[in-house]
Length: 308
Ligand code: PEP
Ligand code: MG
Image (cartoon, rainbow, N blue to C red; front, side):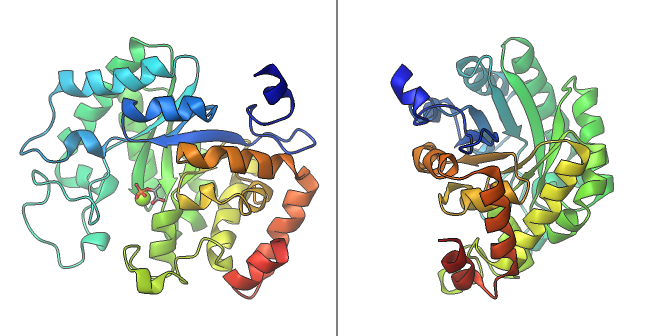
């Protein structure tokens, strides 16, 4: 174990010259925490809370929510847990929220937008997260999905603070939010880029549509450019900017994301070892050089080729 950590196989995410990129796990419940531990994740970068709300007629009770959140926070005592508030949407509809069909659910009332019509769902969830946090030693960060504007980011942070949650951020999943990353980041504690949705909305390509996989490729230079806008805001303001979409699991892309200013990568636990090894094989200067090459490439195929 000690030898493995010393050789960089299980330690924190680092380039060969010591530049830190936190390696975090995506989880949907406490059931996924052992896999995160096995991969030596430094924390949880995305705790999706939808699972608790699925397949039921009504909202989970306060006690049920506190119990589910506490289970993860307790298991991660002393480490970071980034918990995302409910992200009901086109790909994850909830009976109690979506009684009326929308012609374009991906562009409709989803993520934080639900709070416009049903503010109680958000405030109840934040209260449950705050109660669970108070009883455990985890470093709990809360974030909202599907944020488009500074006004939305500001109102979410205010709601989190009102609930007693000191560290609040927003996901970057919409190009408008990425373009204004610096403004948003001044109002929040951190950003977390959801590349699955950011690709979908940047390329106007349904993320469930396999025929459009080339447009949804995380190596698309336009997507990388938007990530770079966020990373630069993070560097300027000295605040964390993570990636928690599928892009974070690509070992070849990890140095590029680090070079764009991304400070943490959150992924399925099984992807962590290869990403850790890939970062350990580059210097910080390599990462910046690779990032510049990838953003300047003519397309995703060319970007991959230049970086490999
Ligand atoms: C994303 O959009 O990249 C993301 C991490 O959120 P989800 O996949 O749950 O929409
Ligand atoms: Mg998303």
